Length: 135
Image 1: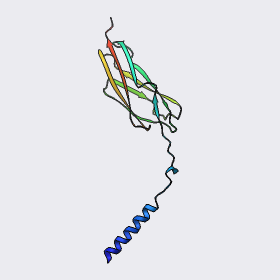
Image 2 (image 1 turned 30 degrees about the horizontal axis):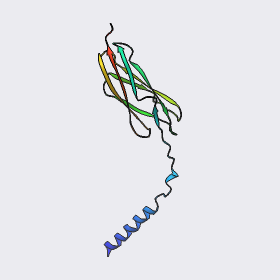
Image 3 (image 1 turned 60 degrees about the horizontal axis):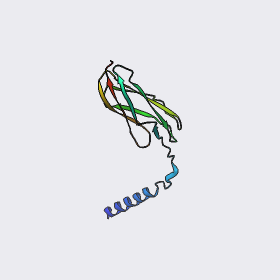
Image 4 (image 1 turned 45 degrees about the horizontal axis):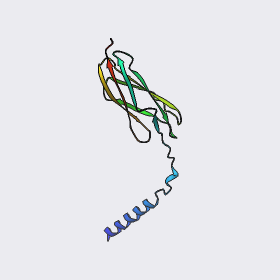
């Protein structure tokens, strides 16, 4: 008898919990940031060894919430990213500065991963080119 009473009380509490859940799904604000890069692949072309390896990725926040880049990682230490920690407001543009070490000779292709609060998660960017010796 005691067991039946406990099960009945548990059943009533469970049903009460589900009935108390909010039924309005649009009640909460659903604004999101959307990051849109001008280009996702930067081609350095053929450049001379030890020349300036700095390039710029430009992006726009096309969403309706502030965009915050939390982290930028690269595939090796030869590629160094620099970016602003300040949120990019909706409709505004921002820049991601990439510096590649041009001491290394030959063709290269490197991947840059941009982590942010943007819809869709991480964004993958690429840089590529060929470094030749000065003649």
